[in-house]
Amino acid sequence: MRGRGGAGFPAGIKWRTVAEAAGPVKYIVCNADEGDSGTFADRMVMEGDPFALIEGMAIAAFAVGAQKGFIYVRSEYPDAIAKLDVAIRLAAEDIAPFRIELRVGAGAYICGEETSLLNSLEGKRGEVRAKPPLPALQGLFGKPTVVNNVLTLAAVPHILADGAEGYAALGTGRSRGTMPIQLAGNIKHGGLFETAFGLTLGEIVNDIGGGTASGRPVKAVQVGGPLGAYLPPSMFHLPFDYEAFAAADALIGHAGVVVFDDTADMLAQARFSMAFTAAESCGKCTPCRIGAVRGVELIDRIAAGGGRAAGPLERLPQMRNVNARPRSLEEEIGLLTDLCETMKFGSLCALGGFAPYPVMSALCHWPQDFGLAPAVEAAQ
Image 1 (cartoon, rainbow, N blue to C red):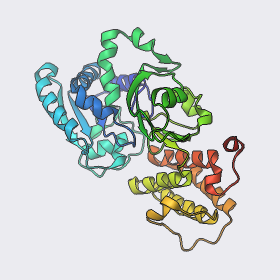
Image 2: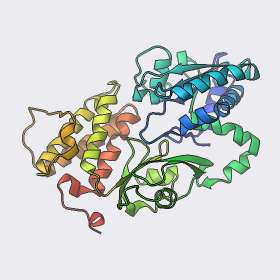
Image 3: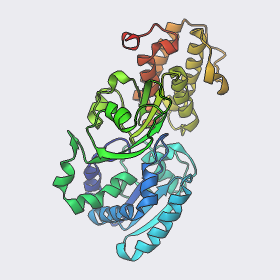
């Protein structure tokens, strides 16, 4: 099973590492800080079947030798928090001696990253830790720790009940089992649709989602939250699995699918992604802390250099570098491309590392929105 939190890292490797780690104290941490735009699967699991999550954590604890677990849930989910609180108390005797404690986050997006989450659980500032050491060896309070998200842990009881072979029979390639896909944005039939990996993006958007709610043509689909790539209809053949998306410079993430029709301004969407990163950066590393701010400034100058009305940009706070010399539109875009490369490969965690995905995908597939000549693909 691949971890469903975003990276798709094999859950069994984490568990085995913690099980084989030395020391009598180990922890199970559930990452329920579901902060990506267009995602709500964790919330629906916690509200609809909290015992599936509790049972999955108890099985993980038995497997690795952990004595205590924590569920870190975002404060914006009051109903999920209330139901989890009751469910934990009801299940306490059944899962003893393993104990689960519920912790509520304070609204920081970065705490969805596992090491920031661990810092927050310890009462520290929610900022990224350098790796190594890995959390599986030195995690919560310096002890071996399994960190999995809600969907990963909630799937564990079903795997044990139905058998590994039955679970592995679902999906495709190295992406096995099912994924709750969340459909949101400008889409006719929004909601949660759980299916095995392997459907194409077009089948998900058009056949399951029914196309746009506005009835206009689809222009872009963002998969994987606010840091996911924007994909055009020409890529609707892409199968929904980790390897196929990675090969296309995209990510599945938490499987949030947000749809935009042909009225969307992709430069404005790219700017939003950079501004979001600038606002949510923990400030630990330079590429993310400074790069995201400079990225917003560059996109603002590109919007002005393209001779186009800013539209939604006018309603957002402007960030300007007063010392910057005038550059041509092509120079500004080249600088933005270089900046994205630096952020992608130089950032300490996925927040800065994935911030270039929506920006570069928007620039690649919709250059006309940036004031450049339309690409052949866009013209067709």
